[in-house]
Length: 138
Image (cartoon, rainbow, N blue to C red):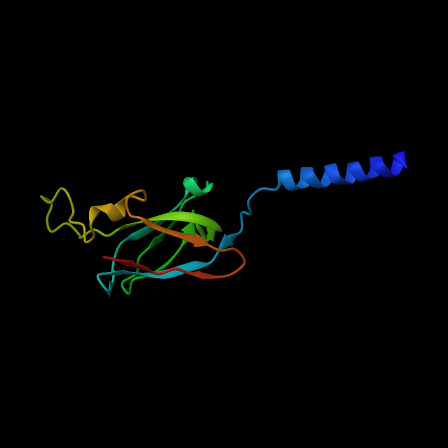
């Protein structure tokens, strides 16, 4: 009886240690979408997904260039995809400087979209499937 109880406790302890030591998956999830501003596709810019610390997320950011048709495909560092989890999203879209005297390029978007805290854009990248996340900015 004592041997059976000790074996049961050993198995339970082993399971608890395995569960406690599991780390968040590092698998990158294929994530695409489209960015629109005032109903039209945003034809230039960068979209940045920052892990949302208020939802317990940490890790690497995912970034993509916004294509002329408004589409994007996320990358984390130089690899396609992003980790599953909750993100705050920021978008930057700047006009090319018209001359060498233009010090600050004009932004096509309101300034709030540059800051993941102020943009109010957030999303969840779900594991084990492709994610398609569109953003409609106003």
